[in-house]
Length: 313
Image 1 (tube, helix red, strand yellow):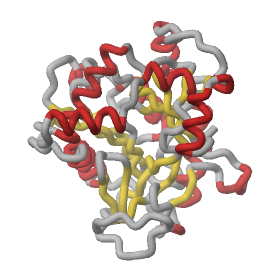
Image 2 (image 1 turned 30 degrees about the vertical axis):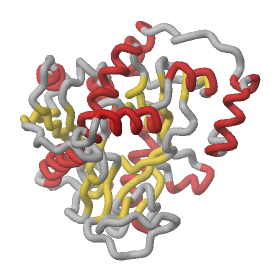
Image 3 (image 1 turned 180 degrees about the vertical axis):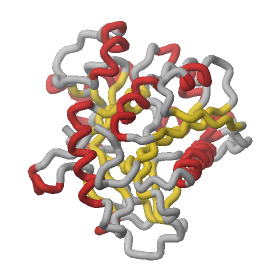
């Protein structure tokens, strides 16, 4: 399988630093999408570990660009800055599509044909700027999903200069968007292609020939699969990049609000019964189940969560 087909050429892009320290599966992330890509751009920030050498060894298709992260400590904005460096480099390749994959996200090999079919079908529909993926968020181990994580995000984006990565690098948006936003009325001059689901500008990453019954491609997100020590290191990084200009008391308040005790939430999460991407096989075999727990359906905390946030699966 190759990105060079009726879809036009495809350039993957990503960014990151200190990925070993954060225990991110960057090799699996990049390799999972390489069969669809003609080339790949990875922007590596100055790191305190072997991140750069890990990325260099992934594949000859991968071009490594060095970066020094700016001292921006508000809402994770620096992550979007670095993602846009990678996207800008990808746009310079002359490719039709960019495949944006974060270093803790992996695509299942079973989904590659439907992604290819979607890129092929929508390539000549210039109004379509991005393709949406369904999300599976794993927590503490590879058998447990947090169903209250976001359920979709755009990861294939048209490289025509009309989009940029926004927020904390969550996904692409139309630059200076002035059109209608469905359900959301966020301030700012961008229209999120995923969050706002902007009508004809975004489509699901699935085989259009199968209609609405065709399943959408998935992103397996493994950023929270860590030991408690590794998870604490990640949360400290988040505190610095999101709230680094706030007082320690306010940082602590926001952490408790946004990141409740993962060992408590683990008990009400969903058990995963499906198959993982093959590129994750060795990592999965090396990590045992975090804990054996009784069914979430027997816990009052599960129903309290449903009352607060709804049943998400």
